[in-house]
Image 1 (cartoon, rainbow, N blue to C red):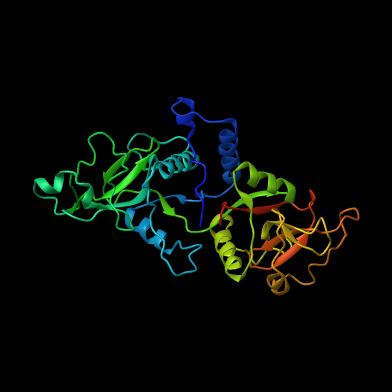
Image 2: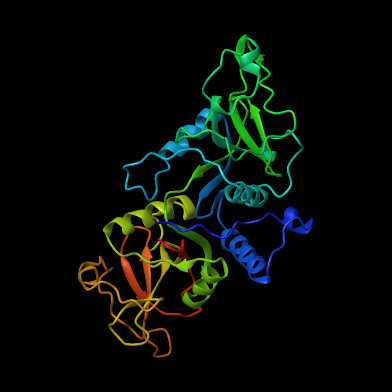
Length: 338
């Protein structure tokens, strides 16, 4: 079961002293920001992922339904369910990272789409349609915002609009940089956030293996484990979203095509273990799809030191390589408890 990460806090909240953070908390926030700094329009935590592209609500909804990393394809994704303060704070952090400065209080980049919709009393007529009732609003799982809500003062106001003769109602919800909620029209365009069912958070910033491990640690994560065929598929899917598609025009050994993982055989040659000390499952190790002729433990190009550190390609093959400045690659972290 995926464990809950530290509740990430936006810089504005910290600066105003509304919440007290330990030095460890602050280090973890800095670590996560650094980890995500080189991604292109995709900002994940262990709970949700924000996409910075501005789209209307229906487009956001459809894209999140297809965002099913980690589900094995059995469960559709959905727009983010922000039913507790931790996820609301996560969104504030990610929105700040995607758009450090918004264009104004009601600007498109001041807000992010999430999955709360009004599903009852949607005629727009009569007193009942304008009076707020939490039972009229539902998250993707069918739950209502009974115990947790952060509506702006005076919202939801349910005011209608007409565009080119078509009547629109404010039956969708968005969240701003301050974590406040507003009902609005589906034709508005904003970034959007999906719930994240996966376990991997990838960084596009090239690192040596040791520096990659330290970066994951600093963000409160562990360096990634890939322990079976399903996880090979999952990390491949994650790499498409976080790093981009594999470009077949690049060379096989282009460093951007390989992703560091959290295993090595530095202690005992040929005995591969994850960073927590547990050895790779023997059956899995015997069937891992290595890139031939690996694992070859070659000492070439590294002053006689051998290749003791594990990585995986964007297409799903494994490689043993050097912990060396000559081998700086993207890397994968993993959510604790997964």
